[in-house]
Length: 179
Image 1 (cartoon, rainbow, N blue to C red):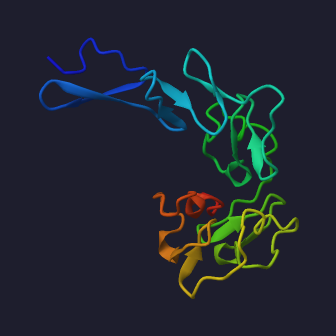
Image 2 (cartoon, rainbow, N blue to C red):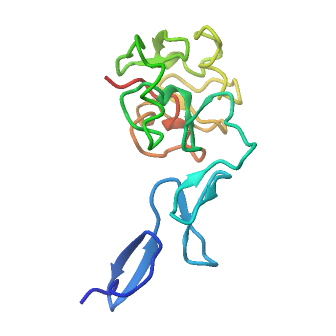
Image 3 (tube, rainbow, N blue to C red):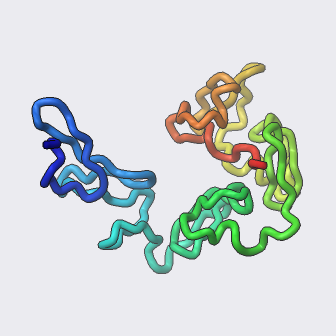
């Protein structure tokens, strides 16, 4: 008999020793301490079925792609052969002829591929300067380091490794295209 039997968690129940449990939430959600239920983060509205959508009249940022289901994802995740929106809207239209960059390249919205170390280097390498748009502070980090959005320098090999090393998760944004 599990400690989660009969417990009501809105998403996930994790059993703990001594017949105790803790409720947890999936991606893009956090546990509301007042209600004990999962809620959407980033200004999204939580529907009764747990789906996260944008509030009517709200739009995605300039560097984001608006999914049909209301989510906003970084534009570089569009046409990367992964269902990042959750409804395939980032993969099902406008992807014909899209160039796939290799794992050492960054995919600009205009379709060109640039070396990943050109992102946030102070030079606009994409046609529209997209590789510099999310960079707040132009101060360079020492060789072999990556500058987080808040200016903190981390080892370059910690960038795009699937782990959040920067407080703002900027080390996992604008990662090279897959394929």
